[in-house]
Length: 457
Image (cartoon, rainbow, N blue to C red; front, side, top):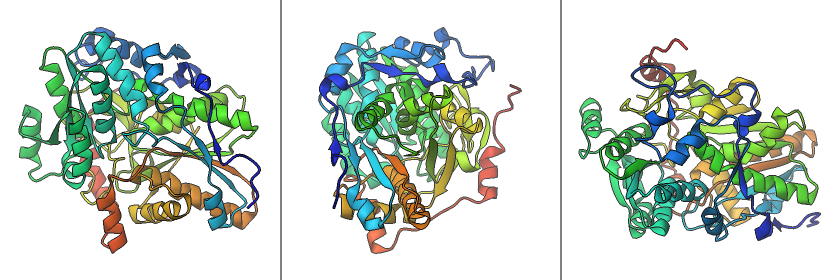
């Protein structure tokens, strides 16, 4: 098999980005501001300080600063597993018999098994710098909770994780990794918080959602001295930290003299997709280059493709600020048969604005086809991918097959955000033929969308 570029492209340690890139600085239409749920006025920094670390609030509200220096303590941690490899998927190309060139940016080469560690270590660092005792958070499939537990152990912080109940039950080993790193893990919704009790009363027997878990984690953080809440996706500060993915990817492509035509990423809350596309989107916004950028989401939780672009609560308990985003309604709870993460009811305000401006596309895929793609990838490329990442693999394979039909030699980049070794219950269901697809009806979605807050902005 002829190879015109190295199989794997690693950057040198001194080529790791020393600054995060803030794509908002280049956006003509800035993301709409967060709103105070009581006054419906834009949130001020001092109103967010009781919930988030002060330095993270500054990052969250800054739409104009293009680059933020990465503190040396965070860079020192990054050196343990970064830069991550950009890999040419030669064997997948051969299996598909496609003229397309397929690359993936692999973020699973750390113990957390995902890209989430890039932001977890940053948020833990700022909590430690502020002198806090600990942090609270939510986690869906468990990647974020695992990453945060590692980061908190590194900085000697207490870590309390509210894990979506169906994932808590389906992924006991992911839960145990968190506990090994010292985190306390609670299935959500739970009876340990007032909001959890309220949700269980209104939805008895519910398997939970990220919106539920966020509400519980925020309640505990606000009610506990010396604690703050941290979030693994959606927020602008998280996409900022994750920009290391895209910055490294672009540096590697520049080193090879290659330019991707198409960039594909799975989309739940938006952290990995936002991080992967950030410098490429920056070029697009500045008119320096053009790329086809595609967000891939699950058909069972289709916020971009079937949601409404409106202000909505970030959590089911309706205690967090309101964000303008593509949303299915904060009351939406994905089907229990949905495997993996990507189960948040809304999408990052940054990505929502870019999508609404026509600067990126969105597609939804069903999970049996996702696992079909995951299995094909694993057999030829030797990595068992996370279900989340496999949404991007599905789309990359589909686009490569289109190239086979047309003869186009497109260069495709997708984000392989993590490994699937803690997702074997889902793989078992797929292999046994018991996995099924669920697509919510319009009536299902209308139940939650009808409850969107009335905001005249």
